[in-house]
Structure formats: C-alpha cells, structure tokens
Amino acid sequence: MKLIQRVGYYLGGLAIGLIILAFFFNAKRTSCSYGPQSRVLKTLNSKKITYGDEVNRSDSSLVKKILNNGHVNFSKSNPRKEPCGLYVIEEDHENKMMILTLENCDSMVKVLTIKNKASH
Image (cartoon, rainbow, N blue to C red; front, side):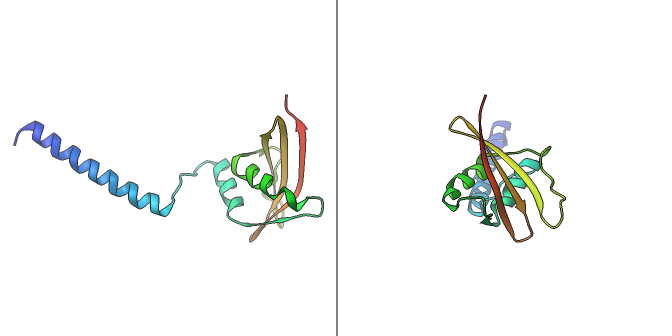
C-alpha cells in the first residue's frame, strides 16, 4: 500500500470519527465551562430564580440576559457567605452598567437588587 493511500484512509477515518463525535456531543448539548466565571453563571442559570421584595418581577427578561451575558465581579461577591453565597454580576445594557446582586442557595437563586449606573 502506498503512502498516499494510507494518508487517504487515515483522513477518511478521521473525518467519519469527527462527524460521529459531533453528532453525539451536539445531542447532549455539552459545553466546556471550566473557568470560574463560566461555572458560576452556568450554576446560577440552572436553578429556579426567585425575586426579593425590592425587585420588580417584570424585569425577569433583563435578569435572564444579565445571567447569560454578564460578568461576575468576584471582588464584590462573597460566595462563601452562609447560608447562601452572594454574587454580583455586571452587564452593559443600553449604555448603562446593570448590576445584579443575588443569593445562590442550594435549590434556588434569589435576586436581591438590580441597579444601573451610566457607563463611561
């Protein structure tokens, strides 16, 4: 068998293997969220969201947008607070910096405040 035939068989098998892997991973909707930022946001999005007294429930779509696209400010957060960790998530929304403060409990996430300040 010539070298070119070996390379052809190798590339053909590799292509079939990649297609099969893509099919299986796409069906499971797997994601690679290994960084602390991604893990926190993924955990918060996977839980039931409740709202505190100061938060208007009509802002639920804004809360979801911030939880999907925001950035966790770890310097203002206190994840080890008992009984529920405290997180501050920031997102630029319509030229305003939206700041979402929430508690991460075992079975739910409670939105405490939504504040906005003008972006620079």
